[in-house]
Length: 178
Image (cartoon, rainbow, N blue to C red; front, side, top):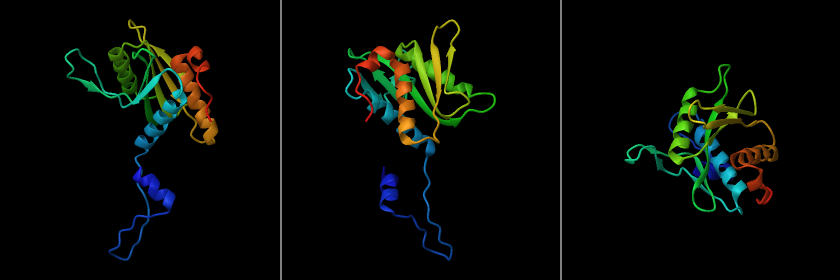
């Protein structure tokens, strides 16, 4: 948030000693992408009967010793989790996305008792892919956002991810993006 304010106000960081002056900022693009996706998803559900929580802690095990924090958990009207998403600032490589992301989402779905989970990436070869986990029946969706498009197109793509997370019936009751 501080970096955003500095950029908008035109401020620059300077290291004064010496003859070489370099002005610039270092951004954690992973965190910036995660924040953008999760806040945009939360805003998509604003005004619906759902509650979105960002970085909502849960536990993998019954003893509550293995803590996890999915980027985005959507709760239904009765307080039960109904969708989970994790944002990854990665581009798909020829061999696909890292398998570790699928394992992480499988753990989230298992701990939250969900049949589907959603990974949202910064770029990919296809806008959507789905993987059904053998012997579990859990489906893990991989969504790739085109970050080179205009902001309204990007928000429309995030709204499409939200539709896939909850189904068309939920989205019909939601207000349109402004």
